[in-house]
Image (cartoon, rainbow, N blue to C red; front, top):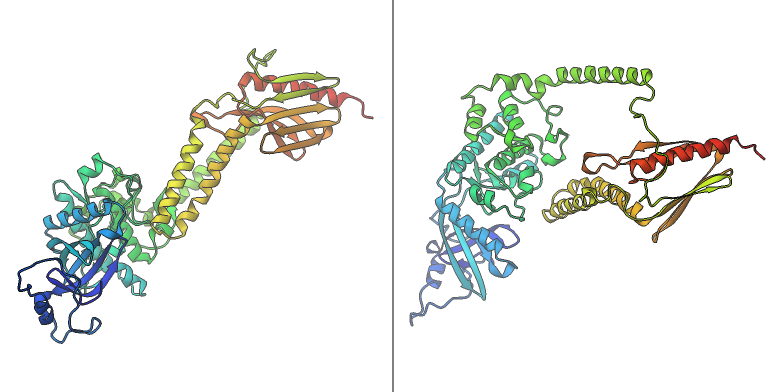
Length: 529
């Protein structure tokens, strides 16, 4: 498909953009091109068979001798051959249906839509009003900047659009508010384009889909999970304003409490700070500021709520930091005092069991002198809980996040951001699986302490002289299934700590603590050779 080709009653002028399954062209009515009009004459026999693509008599790259007199239009052309599923076609037809019902000065007007079969291709065409200008993204990328007053004006106009589509019944959710879909017109006003991801709010709530529509950095948490609402568009609008203020993708900016933090970067007017602070909240229930009221605040038609002025980041940062420091110092003083006054605080009194539980799988054999302990591989206490499933769910979510950011061609920050979560997930999975596939043995002899671990994957051993071995003590581990930390046995050895028995029951652990400490005390009293 080239400039000059005739699509229905229109002649293509130049391509404006190309997506995965659709391309967007600037065009004009064929009746304004004499050669095209002649070429469109019906055959004498009256046949109206599908005709191959036709090119105007002028060179495709050359401007026509007689410029079109009718206003140009935009053709969005969907080629069925370029898609492997029906979902993109459904979205394309939904966009046409939605545009047909919309009537707002800052949204392209629907003209017509039709199907076309030519050159062996089945195409679906949406014709809409052409809005002159450049995208906000290209404007900022070219090095141009906006004043804060202009940003407030554009955000107010975008709020007007969102208030309009939100007032429809059912409300309309755009789902892809970002700098590429906002056209900056020559007169400084904006228009919202690309309704290909649009969905009505009722359908979105009842049938949340797995297809993620949106642009990384401009979509909130609920939209990632497939439940976009009208408030999701408010987040996209605020994130777009952040891009206009900073020239950066919002995801690249510092975060505070999971929220974009501009307080250390910019000083904003109270109205703009209030709107952005409300709309950028990660919790959609806290994005309570309506689009209509936000537009009024940005235009100065309504005052900024007094509470917002008091609590705005730019005004409250200093006092909040002071309170945080004072609170931290107070907590530290109380903690130090508590530790000094009660050295064993936090260590509950223990009634050591006289013997192991009857169903314990621990093997304990006295040596002469010394002690041998074996912990066979297999299920441990706590391993039957939901913890077994948690690492798999964790890694599954991280995999979903990583693949979606790669598919959306997000900045490299996003996939790199997932690396620590991969590490944490693998560590959790390893900490759960290791006891189940590993035989662990402890040898406590006059020569020292030896810990051997063997599995079908690897074998390892740790050995310490008896003089380097301290006491054994049951402690809380870092593993927390079902909001309850598992315990393990920790033995001071050398400059570190040797751990043993993760997942054992409390009775087993405290029995081991008692037996090991008794044996260590005996061995250390033996005369050295």
